[in-house]
Length: 244
Image (cartoon, rainbow, N blue to C red; front, side, top):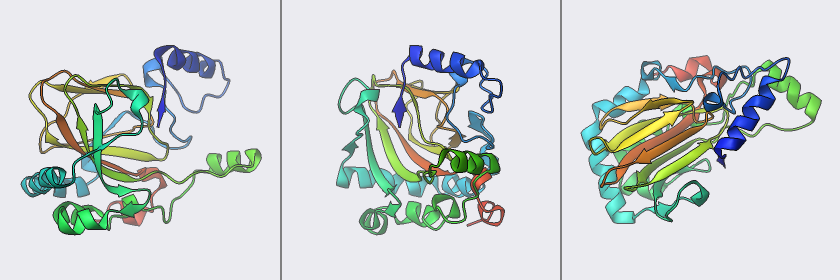
């Protein structure tokens, strides 16, 4: 995860704008992104393109209940990217999937419903990823290897008064957030210059390779289930639309 100040974003945009062949098609400094060339790059996606999210919404009461209970049991871990926020505990998490490994203890003992809905999904695996031709050409010409998309599933807490400064996520993936606890009027998420908020029991999908930031101006914590999965343009077409 990379942080970038406003001046850095503007400088990056202006440099890219001078290139004869700007494959990223950046429109404004607020819409700068680090998505792979050849992949569709839009800030927000229609969640209906990902029918597996509907299962989480349909079973929201169970998902919410067990995740909130799990947090009380295990506590939360401070996010290591503390350069993104002011106070040390502004942004904390509980990991269900991290570094390619599911947290079996939490999944089996505390969050069986949530993990059961997600852990066998092809979207969270690195098998069968299709690398775009132009990326393969760049890899060959530049003699480098492309890192696999970073898939994760975490419960995130954004504390009252917290501001996650503008930053990039990772290439080759999308992010889905399911609102768990969203106090009315508390929070905002801005991705690629487009602003939205969360809603309890509802999912939103965005591309975290775009510059994005989040704020909580309320007096209670905001909690979401964050799911980071392989970009559909890299997935096996037969796997990405399968139902649970």
